[in-house]
Length: 421
Length: 158
Image (cartoon, rainbow over all chains, first blue to last red; front, side, top):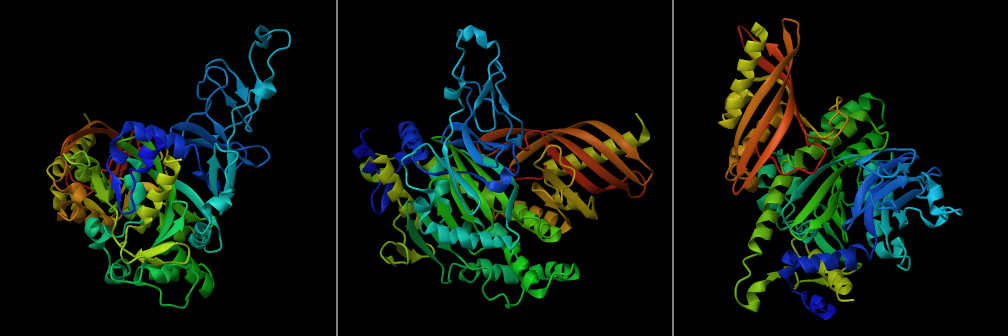
């Protein structure tokens, strides 16, 4: 396929179903999208000290996120320069160095090649070790969120994020003044294309139906908070494929209207925090933080700040995707408040949660149904035109109502730009 | 076989049978009011309150979980998955006459819609004696062997 062919697979109101099923498109996406832009790799709290590491992927390439001895976060290709064995295993951990298990080449935390066993065989001069480090990627971070890119000539992360930054600022108010830490995540896979999950983050339309069994369990106050379909929410295109969906406008700025009445489900927590000696304002801030924000921010291509957690997506193959739901705590914050955050996360998220499995089932159905590609060209498209006729000019881009597919159109416009280039 | 081991074995087999038959009300009745049903993520976890788990249910959450599974409102459990589980290698770790701590292996086979899955776990129980030969569950920890890997949705009680 030519680049023009790729670009033609996205139109203003529709997307071609081959985007979910074509192995060739998937391989090109890994190159033209994941290896060609800023990709989220970690929250800084996941690598707290020198030697702390996390293994992850950029597209299909295994990389190590590690904090070196000087405290700088590095993103290194997880591949020995000698014969390509991975030099780091395990999802997270702590190490002094990266030693290849095959022939013992040893690399420092900054990726530099330190020693090679029996070096004499490379001749009297030995190896020029300075030319053989673990290749490092360009790394930048914003609000503790660490991104990496293979491209040295790409714009700064700050420019790439653009208007998404102010939403990240708002999202981090869940630290309630303590700052944010990410103490763990739930991992699950579904048999479907990665863009199905990408779309879902700004899809409010599915919520009352897919999450009915969750809504049923809520108390009347919480049910009112989560019954946002008739409210003043909206979706806005933030450029570069990013978008924001505001479900609960009064929970956009967690520090606004702190004098409002504390919801029943947080009243025990508030009492316990007061008993621990926190002043009224701090109690109100913490309680707000525990409840999470009222919006989902989708950052193209692989990370979302989703109400009260980070959603990470990892494309595995054209029809398989891995998702991580990373929990957020207040860094060194009150134990009882963090415990409630952990329990609330377990309540909805993850493969045993009351919400995630139903999302997963809906996405499986999309991947199954997309193979019914029919006979005519008309049969081979899926619709992303909801809210298009009523779209207005928002603060940072096109805006439409809460149930609009404006966020999906934002992502697909970026997909088209990168795949068609 | 010690008498305690016989009693515990009978109790765990009864629980396994209730779960495979989806006799959820009877399963809920096996519990202490304050009991916790815990499915950790970290294989070596011991402090289940200050870390993220797949599940850490008190009584209210267990009731809601059961109701969700059978409500017909959740697309992921409609139709419900079918399960068959073997509980074996039961070991009594401690028994002070009131509380028994036991460990067991569980091999669970699941069939849902068009897909079969297998989950192996180590189960850790804290059981309190409730009259002659019967117990209440004070804690059940399900350590999935692949808990720290990516797993698929689990639409039943493990």
